[in-house]
Amino acid sequence: QVQLVESGGGLVQAGGSLRLSCAASGTIFSINTMTWYRQAPGKQRELVATITSGLRPNYADSVKGRFTISRDNAKNTVYLQMNSLKPEDTAAYYCYAEVQTVSRTWYDYWGQGTQVTVSS
Image (cartoon, rainbow, N blue to C red):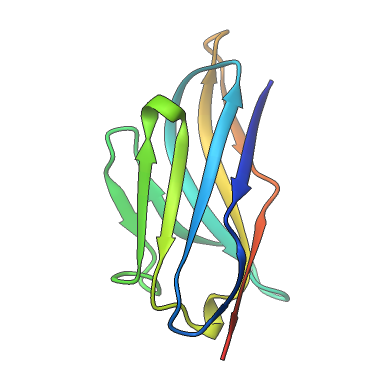
């Protein structure tokens, strides 16, 4: 069994910063790509940023230059540093990971989500 637990969400004023964390735990052998998604009310879930096991990042155009994804492979943890936040960044943020368990089987896992609210 594998769990992804996000933390770090909250309420912040426009222009402020937040750092999200997502820690994976359980019967993990390896983790491939780790990704942050977000979903605002009434909208579809969208990819925010992703990072490979080799630490290669990729970003949605809407967050490039403002958000930074990073990863600590030893801790099975992915981070999302969010700077210059805008009200349109308000959403529930979800962590996603491609995990190979100790049985060498690959599964997709999602975290429970953490709310980010940016006030104008």
